[in-house]
Structure formats: structure tokens, C-alpha cells
Length: 142
Image (cartoon, rainbow, N blue to C red; front, side, top):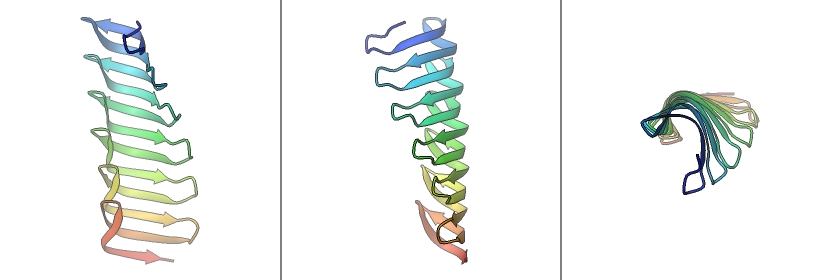
């Protein structure tokens, strides 16, 4: 089925809405393959962005929600929890340069308790984070 906006859907329908398993190729170059409910990505699915970043995991009402992983073209990989399309909850970000952050996330930022390991300088920070920055009680081990 070709939508007026150029998107192309191939999959199951129910009551004139995408439902069950299907593939949607967006005119923008993005591609979603997975479960649908009420015309929205819902359940397990994979989205390949136009820049080739790839998210694989759970969806609720067209948003990343639940467990999932996002592989960035630059080599970074986030594995963890999502809420309303943002990294929120517990997760780990492995950076392509060898750095690793594991801990709490809120609105795509490090927030709460977490551990950051710096590969280059060989130090480990364990402690509090707020809005992506070290904030509060923490310790660095060299």
C-alpha cells in the first residue's frame, strides 16, 4: 500500500489499520519492521533511521518504550530501558572509543546513580548524575 506522502506499507491490516506484523518504508528513507497495533508501531520492532542508526526493541503507541538497544553509526551502542522515545530507567552506553556508562537515565541523559569508565584516562567515576553531568556525591578511582 502506498500512502499519499510516499510511505509504502506491506503487512497485515485490521479494520483499515496496520495491525500485526508489517514493514513500513518511509519516504524519508527510514524503515520500520515489526509489530503494529491500531496503525502504530506497538510490540517488538526494528527501526532503521535514514542515517542508518538502528533501534531494535519494544514499542508502545509509535514510541520506543520498554527494553531496547540503539546502535549508532558512529559505533556507540545503548542497551537498556526506554520511555516515551527516550532512554529512561536503567541502561548502558558503550562508546566507540571504549568509554562505558552504566546506570540510571532520564530523558536521554545520565541521571541518578551511575558508573562511568573512561578508557583513555583509565579512571572510574561512581556516583550521582543530574541532567547528564556528575552532580552530588561520587568518587573517582584512578
